[in-house]
Image 1 (cartoon, helix red, strand yellow):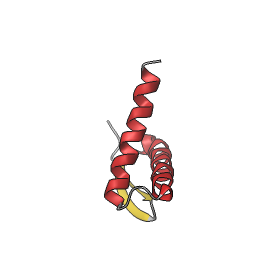
Image 2 (cartoon, helix red, strand yellow):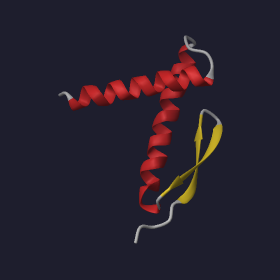
Image 3 (tube, helix red, strand yellow):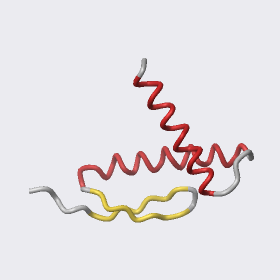
Image 4 (tube, helix red, strand yellow):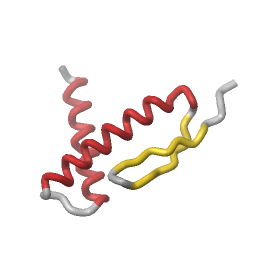
Length: 73
C-alpha cells in the first residue's frame, strides 16, 4: 500500500511553501527546491527581470532548456 503524503516545507526566494510529498521523495523535493531557489536568485541578481512571477517563469525556462540539452547529448 502506498504511503500517505506528508507535508514538507520548502523555502524559495524567501517565501515558504507547504508541499504534499511521499516520504521517499522528500529529499528529491528539497533538492529541487534548493536548485530552483538558486536559479531564481541568480535571475533576480542580474537585475534584468522584475517580479517574482516573471523570475519564476524565466527560471523554469532555463531549467527546462538545461534538461532538454542534456537529453539530446
